[in-house]
Length: 166
Image (cartoon, rainbow, N blue to C red):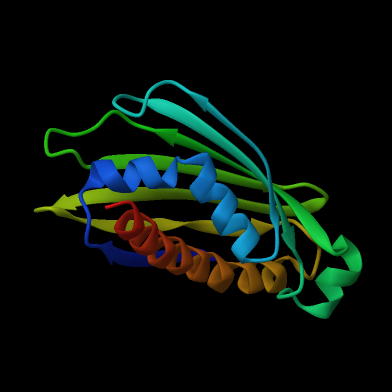
């Protein structure tokens, strides 16, 4: 299932990166959706190429009932982000891999933080797949819009987070 979403933030890329990689912000987002932040590991400085690994427990309340029965109340979600070094205008490309413990669902995506003057456009393109026989397509179809919504929530919350720090 193809994943495609885009949103705009009224802040420069550097502020968006600082927010998207902040443990406090990641905890806030996790708790806002009823989950919890388990761990955050960053390898490298945000000024160059670096890797960010985030593990969260996320509730399954928005999944189809059949999925909830199979997966339980919460999912352990590991998101690994490989951030490339900044381009000359400050834009960044992030390769994202999402694994869900106990669920044969994979997300492979590329997120671009594009500098547009003093603002940032966040574009996300990728695929959601599931290897569950006969149900894989339905599971991937259910996951795809939730990931698009997650980007919108992240962007909305990032706007408020950055504004609150100004």
